[in-house]
Image (cartoon, rainbow, N blue to C red; front, side, top):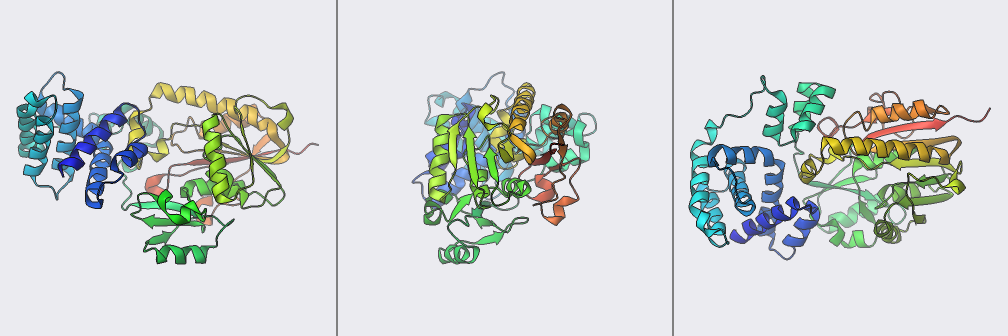
Length: 441
């Protein structure tokens, strides 16, 4: 498994430099035999999911002022195996890590790596972590590997116990959420096709068009995907579209649409006209490719959602603002996001969201609706921004989300908005809110 470990170290290095984890994993694991591919992927994801705790343990035993980045990444995967991989013998975790150093330009440090890992193996139970009572944010930050500012924010907004449950949550099994594309397939025939290909799946929790496929790493390599019979989409994202409650004949605008999953789902409701925008040309091209695959008829264009289009004012029955956000609602399954955001970034994001809301409200017809959604969990971007919007745009009022949401979630709607939590709902952490423009007197 030396090759798998070497690849894991290379992926960690790329992610540190800003690469997207899913793309780096796909690139490096392509062509690797199944067992090695699974081990390398598990090693990378487990290391990143527990990165701050692993680094805390390394620093506890290394007692070094500075550790070279490559050496630290080798130590990270070694400590990860010692802490979280019960099936890997201690000797293998240590010796294979030393071999990686011996084969590198830092071969003179193989004795250092050997000593640190053997010390970890022998004395791991003696590590003094931050105490829950004295430093609750530090405890959550290190034990569950979330930046301290996120732990502090969640303790302040939701209380320590709720924050603890949320940050400690891990989805129990590897399922990929897909949506049946009713423009090309029906549920029964698609299920038969999946079964015929030996794929195990379970139904969605809230949306009948959702299926969860077990242990499939590359859905896009499936012929059913290439033919457009299904697409990858989270169930929370589908709930946003359900909440929009688009009716046949509506004019619909999705202002931050790429890669187009929500627009494509809205197309199934047979709107009279469907338009999708994105800020970047390459993302608009990707969106058009997805629409072609799925058989979606929509007009796509490059458009900055913060810049008013006069020709679109009061033209749409439904405007969807799935705003750019901090994506904190995805951290439980995309651990690289944890370390790509800061609390300073959050303030910029909040202001961008406000700008988009204020501009895009202009496109809603009297009596029409605006849907505001994010894939994040924090009150500044979600509840507070939505309330700010209602105060700024007095011709809008909260609509309640009663149309389109499943019954088991309606009771959770507060002030026109719904916050989904992974540990409570088993889906991505989304916020969904709906406002209706008052009709002219």
